[in-house]
Length: 513
Image 1 (cartoon, rainbow, N blue to C red):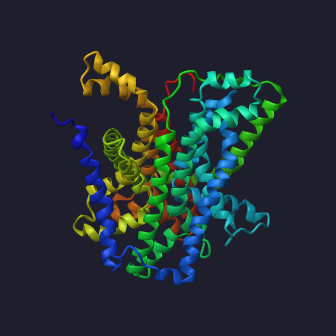
Image 2: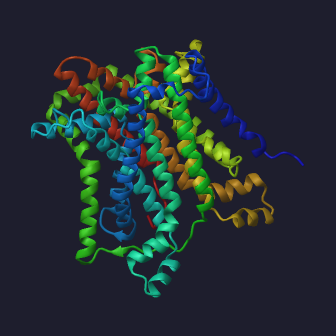
């Protein structure tokens, strides 16, 4: 039998993962002498034990907060029709597409010592609340949007049958809706945990000396103390633990995934005090968690005056904007290609499904240092920079497509083949149109990730390759109020650019949206 393309195309993303992630990580571990998988010496260090324990605790606490707060909001957005609902779903993604550096600035503008809370005498510096709020600001939208889409796929017939048999709305939710959305909610919580545990920018800015995470510790050990052995050991333990979490989730999601149903639950008209209160509560929660830091950031940028906005006309800024669009555009093409190949090849292999999470469980700082050690001759190579961008972004495309493929009925492909379509034609005419919304969603998340990438840009680019994120960081490092104002203005512009790209890529054609 002649081999199909799927038999060997998986080697392309596999080679990419090995060459850009696993090999650099191994090089970093070997450089530091951390070649053993088991090294318990770091457990004897109280400081390192606290870093690891706090990293797990803050990620777990964020998942719990996101689930408790986000699930009711998602139900309201999925089940109630009100004016501006689509607009809310679009704007809801703004916290996620904001770069971590900009998000941290927004949290500090609201709750920092010089922010609104500080002006009212509330001092949250050197407390865990800044980082937890930053995590919640960043990740609440992930669960809400995912749960909304899952709720929209719940069978209306089954829900109506439950209500007909006397089930209350609360009981119908737990017996019908909740089991149907568990895979999607689990996927969102998995991503939230990975973002919080492996996150770098928020922990670096908001964690302080006491509440920084293990990723900040790895960065400190490598960049400032040159303790490569200790950093390599921590990186290895982190990678092993997070890979185990991802593997457990993939195992569960394989059994819970189900084909999408066409009988959608109709949304309720906004009538009655109960629904009005539910919508007001949901929008109020989103405003407090996701809107307040952005409002504080925009308020400070506006208070800087129109003169500060002239920074966008400076040659340095225009060059950074061009670099950001050029690097992100090239990396998006590569990330989309890799995501398609990863999702459509060996999809039923458990280890291959779990491999898509590997780039998410290694911090960009670790990746960047590993690439510098393994490929020193390509340090200032544009190809290496774009490839590193794509490495961090393509899992979003692959994960979205894998979830969509799990929901597609197998008989559609079989019907196309029985009518004489070749495998390639069946894929092009049947499968691809059905998963196109998921593809756009994955591309949107990938584009947002690349627009806001900071660590890779900082360590792998040339001075003339400054992007908007590195320019903001440079402005923050320069003395004077003018540079701070310029950083705020640039951050607001980058937020607007990220949202524009996200909305353009994630345009829906579904009339039920």
